[in-house]
Amino acid sequence: MRETPIKKMKDLMAHIQREPARTENRRKITLTRQQVLACVRFADMVNVAWEEELAGTPLGQRTAQQFLLLGQGGTGKTFIVLYLFIPLVNWAFPPDGDGDRYMVLAYSHAQADAISTRDIRARTLHSACGMRVQTLCNKKMAVGSKREFLTHMWSNKRVIFNEEISMCPAEVINMEMYRSMLGRKDDWALEPDEYHNLNVLLGRMPIVVMLGDFLQLKPPRQLSLVDDLVEKARDGVDVSIEAQNACRAFDGIDSVMELTETRRFKDDVLPRFMNFMRAADGSQRMPEELWRTLRNRSVEVAGAELEHEKFATGHVVGIFWENIARSMMERAMRDANRLDVPLIFSQACDKRPVSQRWGKRSETERRVVHELLTTVNVHKTGHLHGLLPMHEGMRMRLLFKLSAVDGLVNERQCTVVKIVPHSAEPEIPQHYHEVKLRHQVKLGRCLSGTPPLR
Image (tube, rainbow, N blue to C red; front, side, top):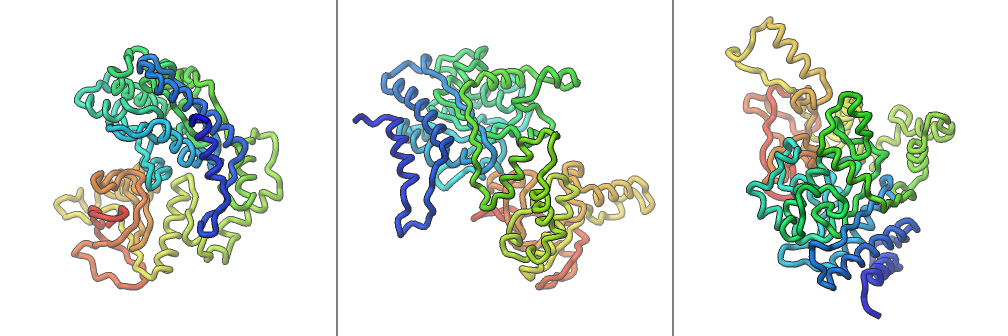
């Protein structure tokens, strides 16, 4: 029997669901029915592109296919992409002189890091398109000096995976559509005016897979792919033609599947809670038993459970900065005590020389200092925390780019390996102790290893 993408997908699914050998340190994996159906659909798409590749169909006549795979966290979208879809792509379209024939793309560095593995490295949409954070109107996205880069990045690709599509602003998706067209324009016989049509989407990409969950938070202060643009325009929102093109293309995708069975949580409380929230329409109250269970998980009630290792090293979830700021203080004090290292409090304002001050009794100076020290949302203070707790061994997430060369970019997770105080500061004790610095600590560059923060 001739090896085909469909047969190859069957083999991959059988391999991943095999019984673990005694020497293997893993649990048995069983795909859900919905995951199997998603694999069948993807294998069929690969088969179409593969047959055209074997037949030597001119690139300007290739079939462009799109697939939207939805599902809440834990339903296995990324799992089947990493361990079934991409291996199938590598078999059907082996790497050539320009590298892999697929790309995994995400909006932010944090999302790209979360889905990357040792062998599969996701990129941000901006880096794949050779773009900075700038105005995303088409006339400002001409190819310019990036023609060779875009051609090398996009022309040989046969499959694109867009992760967390629900978190991508519509104008960023338009950027991907437009810049990918520019990179494939010559080889794939494309007309710039038609870049937003489905039959030439992403430069006539043979396969485009978009993954996400539109019941999550939308892009902050930007238009989503599922926003009602007419309603937004009536509300006075500036709806650009670029956002309209992206939304129109997205609305035209007719191959859609949703995964509903989540396996991320070992208990059934969080899945039940998430399912209730996703289906809530305000007509029914949360079941009393579920509400009591959630209340018992609060910090005020949990008590001794807070000392358990899983909680002590886990993540604290928060949405509002008023909650996050309190959690940061509580967590920093607890972790510094546990590690027996000094806890350093660095204030947002240095003590400036007299020549740089507005005056001892300056109302302007008092107001500015008061705002910096009391505003907890750092996006309103130039990314300065009023009073930032730090200690060696503390895990952090960066809010802005420190050094792209060293990988210290926005949303990067890192660890504080050393704190170097100002020379004017008194000597800091070696064991757990709370210390307030008068001067800001300086951030240095990481030279090797997992990106730490100095």
